[in-house]
Length: 199
Length: 297
Image (cartoon, rainbow over all chains, first blue to last red; front, side):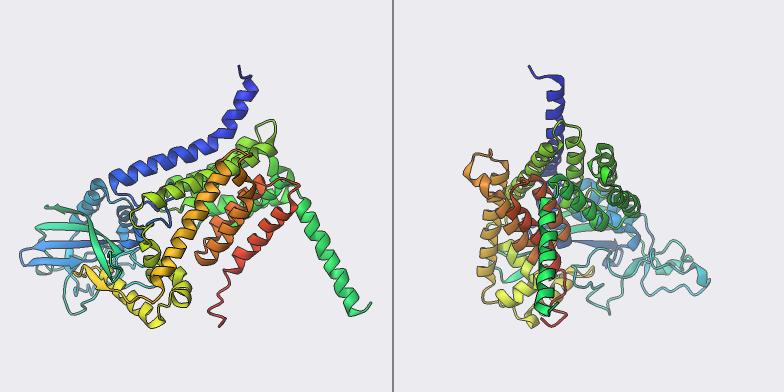
């Protein structure tokens, strides 16, 4: 039979390794059940797949009376965006979609003139690139500068005239992943999950 | 004293210092390396950097703290808190750093802390490489070489390898960047874009794939197998080879640093050549932080 101090030594020797093992097994299960990226969560799946959080993108589409509008998510959602890209579970995508639905969406050319101090801050303005979307080289906000769309109304912005606000009928949040196709000749997007909500 | 004599004296002084470094207690060296890692690479969150800076400096100043179990428990608790707060964004080596701090704490509670720390280092290295291997076999795009092809085309850390070894022209790389950016744009509707590759892209990706899988598998086996298993004798050279070849390309200094700290803890005191190898590798991975390309090299 093991003496007490021998037993204590064994527990002390095994504890850190058991912790590593336990967290890594949980991560494996989560990757297969929630779509979590293998790169994150303590499972040592980095540099094993191109399906990293950086390779995942979110697309937000507002559906109004006049059709669909692709919009940027506001920067204040950056943590939720990061989480949704890393773990695009039904729950996380729905939560982010619900948060976007709760916003007011204004025509992007709306500029509040008065009062100046209530202009949206850099952090809560609706325009600009989706936070965290940079690949590490540089980021871009949009392709088509001419196509007028909508942006989230900043918390401190004065309320715009009603005709500038979009009456959102539905909102769709899509999670995609960039990868090389099997021939290695083109980048392609693979659809991971979509959630559509109505007010 | 003539110049050659002065140089000879300086060389002998450096040699004496090197010998002293090789004779240092392995566990203390591992502890100092770990403190340096926590001080410089713990992350950017204030709740990590502020307490860790204070505690690490105390550890450097008060040597007995290096072998104090409560001290390592405190460091482990702070590191674990950082992991807990940022579970889905921190890199895997941040988790491993926490396990290693816990391992040092637990080792110092045993009757033979040095042997315990050596075993902890061995198990943590072995297990982390075993899980890394698992993912490389389980991922659908690793063994086919697609992963490294993709990384060379989109990851700036692989730019040099892509242009010099795989033959992807810089102009093509710029076009690829633009196409990725267009796919990522929030108003994009496209779901595909052509890639401009290079003549040796597939071959380079295959070599990297198989080198990675083979060396990781060997390291996992060498560190987890019983000491009498023949591969166990090669575990330290294998780990050093991995650190040097991997972090020259994907320069994750924190991970390399941690592996070296755990490797030193597991290295027998009398094995001076291997310990020297660890020290040289430590300098080597930092040398790759120098932006050679910006210097025109």
